[in-house]
Image (cartoon, rainbow, N blue to C red):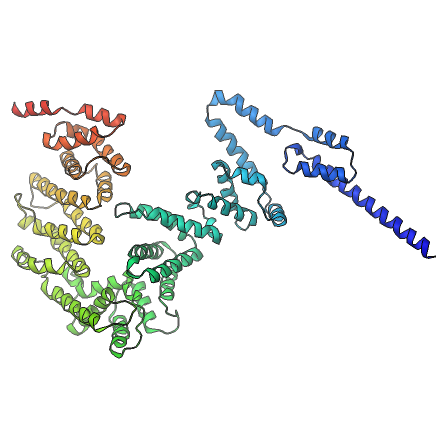
Length: 598
């Protein structure tokens, strides 16, 4: 009885194997019968499996021939035939149409399943990534299917190939951690050569990559915080970038409390834990006002820690511009804002001590030398608070100049003096210029601003803002000639500011205001600006200046030779058609001299 049983099992096994081979043949035939199956990269392996399962070779040829539709060949033919008619743009149009079809028919589940099986990107994907048009297709797919593991791997592959710059505007890229770190590194590399002129322009790419989502903002701030701790005093550049990101989030994000909480957490404080420093700092940031109670809480914590020898709260909290600026405004604001009342001495002392602590101290234990410097700065801050007169007359300003020159050697004191100068110059509709300006000398306030810009590069934006106040002023008692003279004197200072690595913001300002500026004043600006620089000129300088010359060419033609000479030299140094035409339109030096002689 055992033999028949064994024979029966063998027959069953044989039948099962035959069914399996038949089933495999049918599955492979279905794949070979799909439209343009012969064009699929996997067709060779499909044919091998069909033949191994006992399929007839003739059937493979028949299926591949009958399923061939020639879509790829027809696409090439259309491209070839329409190219001479529609020009090279037809290829881009066809690529875009194909890209749309790919996006419409992409199946993320199937793609992820295939990727999970092999752990590798398909060969055709690898080939696509070498062409920008198909990389853009991958980007668009990742925007539509941010959870796809295959697309995530494709994005990483793109980043590894060095195309991070293409991905900074991609909202889905930061969702993939490995891609985000590459993007962050790329953005920082792009910012490394930045200077004061193009800092904010370079910063835009980093803001795009970091500030779209809470998670990426937190990770970036955490990374920057770690870098600052490692570099210490050498981390000024990273600290500024960090501050700019926080400012952007506070100004533009719908949940400013997020940025506040992250800053407090990175400073080592527990949010919502009843910590008086946390509560006071959060209150100042949210209200944009340093209330007496909040300042008293901060003073008690920081000053108490110093006198007792206990660990102090992180100084980063006080250094935060959103905390420090309201404190400065409360103690010094009466010098430039009539709505701010002067604080009582006992209150002002606490405000001033916190300001001095913020700018001098670190998170390290405070030694006796640092305590002495702290006390010295407190004394200087008090001297500035008492020594600067509110809306002074010219004699008082001249008397204060020696002290002011001493004060502005310290950055925080220079900042206070700068804000005071700006108010003195603009108070009561520019009464200072109306009363004291003469065409024969430069106002002392402008000279002080120039000195501040030279000593403290980070204050150049505030100095430029003060210059713009005077340049745009319409002093009631001035004749048109005197107003033009004031503008030209201010332009002389602005040109010197441009020489201090601040040319691009200056050029951008005059480009934006060119329609409101008198033509002769614009020519004078170009003359004074170009007198500060020599060829070769960087592209970001050359292009806007060339456009300004083109805009004011009629005024340049009739200008004095001493104003034309630098403009002519600038144009002669540029090798392009527009510059040559503009240079040819100018009178030569001999004709200008003859005209003046007549």
